Length: 223
Image 1 (cartoon, rainbow, N blue to C red):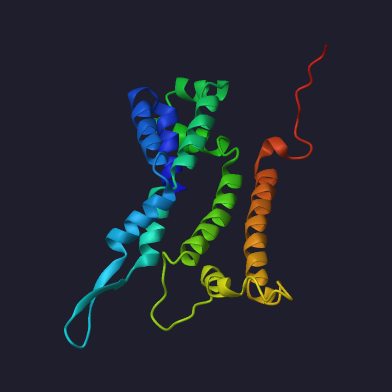
Image 2: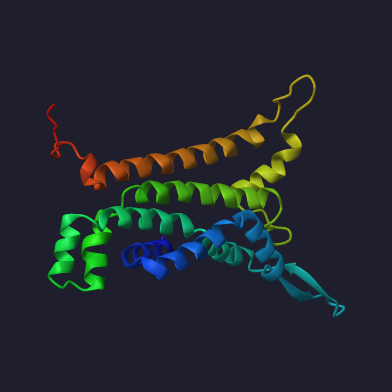
């Protein structure tokens, strides 16, 4: 959010060659799938050397959580940058922006005092939906075995719980849902978590967007 907001504000406000360069960089990051990026980063930096008692060195999972968080940040700012840039382009041509620039307001004051409070349309919904999406994505990484816990440990992780219960998804022929309790509660928790954050985003949009508040003045056009 911080990276995308800053780049989107700068790109939309200054325009010109800087806008074109930042948007081409954004497009290049968007062209690379985040799942593939996480797999590449895990393969490159998610393993470390460990020594056996016989002085034999072998690779073991190491720093995987940190690598995944860094990768999700590095490949997750583009939607925020594009959203803020689009809002800035629509906002910078309005009268109050022209008035602020005509009295000699500096770029920093224009960006953070005038633009930023007025270009948050859709931002809170995107943030809330991203929180749910990132958790589901991390659950998927653990489920497919991309992130592995330490040897002999069992963490309270949704993805690991689903991974352990995959052998009991289908029960005996007489009772297919015999072991439903191994995967249904975790699946419901993931579903409610994602839906809950989307509802929070909608609520924040209604509360913090002055255009959607009850009693706000509306423009009436007569025939």
